[in-house]
Structures are given as structure tokens and as C-alpha cells.
Length: 466
Image 1: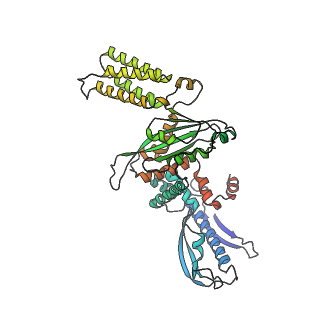
Image 2: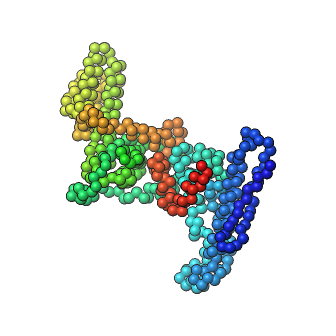
Image 3: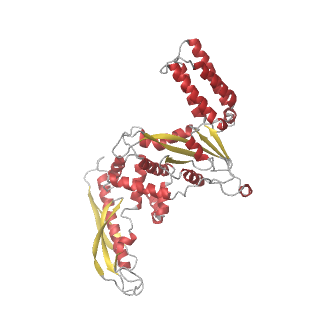
């Protein structure tokens, strides 16, 4: 059996339709491996259809624009060049005529121009850029290349995917407004006239570390990236992130995320963070009705570390005494009794301290950690709330959801089981594209940049295929 696939080109102007063969399939007896199209056959079919479709589009465009717009005189051809255009279904070489400018056009300074170069300002299809950026933000560049080549009739060069992803990231970055010290606009009288917001926003912010690379040095340590997530009852959650020492618009980036969730100046916002200076400064002057809280997770994490250190001490009665003190410290912080908690931390630290203590001993390390914990609570005392009361009312007190976001945005792509080492710029670019993908915004951004990409026929085709 032979199956011949043909394309019928209907110009809709009265000219006779053109019928062109595309591909021919042969089948023998029915078997599991011969039922329907194979991957190779589907690739060949898509490649040939794409080639014919583009050929007809280019031919029609040249026919329409080879005459002068003013005097309708046919323009003379100076010569032909060839331009390469990369699509989802293969790389095509298009014949690009160079035409002499018409003598009636006195304003034109150019004597000749390339007809296709003006309309094809980029040599890569928007949908190919989209897929390359999306998949490279989820998996490595090498795996992205393998995925695209497995399912599409194209050659996906790794360096090309890298370049496209960075180009998309730069375009996303360029649309972030300039950094400002304060993003609070208007006055309280204006805020009261705004519609009442449905529910408050809860924003958790935390940091993660990425393997650094400087030039050819692949052991340049680590650098920090900040990641945040915004939760809202009626809007989808949104993420944002940046590399601390590279990004110069962190507050503007946070404000952009809030605007996408419909933030209003009269809306309540709860910021949860680990109490670090970088994160604390980021939250300031963003919203007038904001509450800044120290994350309960980071408090209990430090107390848990001290408990584990106490368990390694002898004798048992001394260990039990310190363990009870830690429970009391945790209870007082849980109920917002900061002054009492600080007194108990100070007493705990004194019980661990001995003048002639070996600096390498477990007891000295415990004393040093307790002293750092005292400084940590003292520095963030005004951001400690009554966690017990908030918990009873079902309010969020921990950034555990942000820990998952750090893992989602940074660790899965750039840290865990990854051998890559990143420059600060490269990591920052990757974070922007990855966040746009995870927020389900990347496709919308491309449709906004390339309006014709959002083809209304796509939904009809998908429904017909289903």
C-alpha cells in the first residue's frame, strides 16, 4: 500500500490551485511497528510541509512588494542573496532579492534594499525561541538539544540554545522598571478610596547558594541568590528571584511581581523572612500596610541544632538541664515573650561557658552557637510575633513554602546533581527565564512580543486534532 500526501495551494485570487506532492509512505502487512506514522516519517512530513508553506509565503510576499508603493512601477532587481531562517521544523535557506529603490522616492537615502530582511528582522522563529528558552530553563542545555532533536525535524545546537535563552532573559530583564528607594505612591486618603482588596498577600523570601565560576576557575566558591513567592487566595501564586551581587533592580522586581497579582496600596501584606539584612532591606517601602515577621522555621532550626549539640554532652543530668532550658526558650519565643526568651538564652549561654574551656570542645562550640543565637534574636526582636496566636487563627508563620520554591527555582536546575558552575550573570539570566516558565508567563510574554504568534487558529486546530 502507498499513501501519497499532497499540498493544495489556493491563492484565492482566481488563479488555478497548485497541487504539489509532499511525501509518500509505503506499508506492507499490519504490525505493531508499522501502524500509523513513525517518528522519522512524521519529521519528514513536517519538514516538507514547512518548506513548501514558507516557500509559498515568501513567493507571495515578494510578488506583492516588488512594485513601488507610490507609482506602482516594478522595481529592478540588483541581485540575490540567501538568508538562513531556523524554524521548529528545520533550517531553511531563502532567496532574498535585493531591489533598487524607485526614482520617485526622493526621501529614501538607500539606493537598494533587501526585501526579506526588513520583515524577517530575526533569523529564528519565535516559537523555536520559546521552546528553547522554556526547556533549557527546566533541564540542561544538552538535554534540551536532545529533546528537540528527538521530536522535531531540526538540529538543535547547544550554543544556539544558550544564546537564545540569554537573549530572552535580557529582554525580560529590560522590561523591569528602574529601581527606586520607595514604591509607595499616593496618600492614605487616596488609598481609602480604592476598592477593598479581597484578601491579604503573604510573601516569603529566602536565599539559596549556587556554585560559582570565574573565568576558567571552576572552584570559585558560592554566591547567593534570593528567591521569593507570593501567595494569594484568589490569584495564582507568583515567584521572583535574582542574584544578590549582580541585580541592580531587586525592589522593582518584587514590585513587578506584586503588580501581576493585582496588588493595591490599601492591601495588607505579610512579609516572612529569615531576618537577614539583604532580605529585610528588600521588603522596606514596598507597601504602606505591611507586616514584617521573622520566620518561625529559621528559629526552630537553630534551636534544633543546639538540641543536637546538647545530646552529645555528658553527664546526663547536665544534658537534661540544658535541654529543659532550650524547651523554655522555644516556648517563650513561640508565645512572643522576647525579653524573657533573651534572658533565658543569656542564662543558657552562661551555663555553657567556662574560662579554661578547650576551643575545639563540644561545649565551647555550643556556647559560641548560643551566643550567636542571642544576637540573632536580639537583632530581630521587633519582627517576632505571637506565633501561637497566629497559628490558632490559621495564619502562615513559616517560610516552608519558600524553601520549596528555592528548591524549585535554584536547586533542581543549578545545584542538585548538577556539575555546572555558574557566573553570577549566567545564573541570574537562568533564574529569570525559569521563573517566567514556572509562573506560566513565558508563553504570554512571547505572544506580547510577537503578536502574530498568538494565532487564533491554534485552538481550532487543537480541538480538531482532539
